[in-house]
Image 1 (cartoon, rainbow, N blue to C red):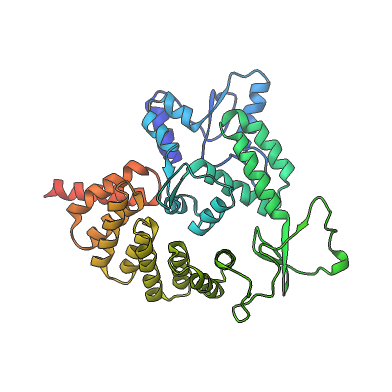
Image 2 (image 1 turned 180 degrees about the horizontal axis):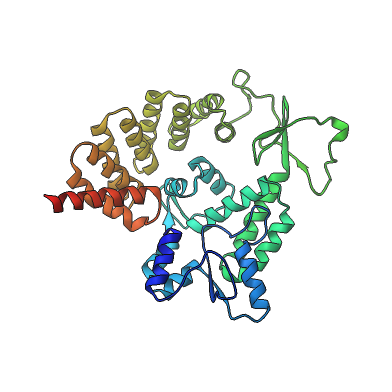
Length: 386
């Protein structure tokens, strides 16, 4: 909910809400969208003020959002906070691209709560926390400062140990650089490091810096393929290039790995992603089709097929793709959302209603959820006016 909605809820339960912590404050509620840390890595200013008042003996409690929802009787909403989200839903909620979410999952930075076929579901808090930690480290906040703050906030949250693991992996990644033919790259940000000469670089045994290549050192390029590489080498190279926004170069790598294993659905899926990012939508459609031909239950491929057909104005094929996705996984939130939108565009809005309603059982606060609520509200208004 928004802050205004939370303040109204407090008023309905006989309380008074304020924008700032003062000696009249009796309860501070800490939100659960990531860790409540300022841009300098310190705990939020309101938390610091509340902590100081508590230290002075003031009767002020600090609780997390989930426990507050329990106090005001919204246990259903409290449960929603801890439900699982698809990468696309998290992308909408957190402003993190699906590609980043997938990369974090492969690196072990975030752990799926469950998996349906190839589709991963994640905890909102874990991904939101990783995003916050990543932003702080990228802004140059020392790891020791973040770790100290997390230690202070740990009593409020149940996943403190997991967050420290995330911080360890992110901080380690931020110190790793690797060399290509043009110099050094810092993979956490993708930025090239300039102005170093060999004598100025830290020694390899320096505790703060590790030099490595993400793959075996090679003079690989699309024009000079590595004669010793197999499927896994080419596949990893393609994913890495795609993550570095080198989609055109990644296409050749994925084609090479498919020469080794032409029936590997995931390679077709990633090749489709690369082709689409290069503006070759029709070619991407064919590769998504190849992915589902080799793995009929590849839910995300069916969803991407639907989205691309919709983008091209081909609404009936789009609808068919989303219907297949829902036959494979009837509880797939993304497919319910997209199918509802396609039906709406086809002037079959009455058929869209159950899909929007079903989506809202999975997500109550994201942009898609807000659109679904607006659509349903407008329909109800039109019905009443009629």
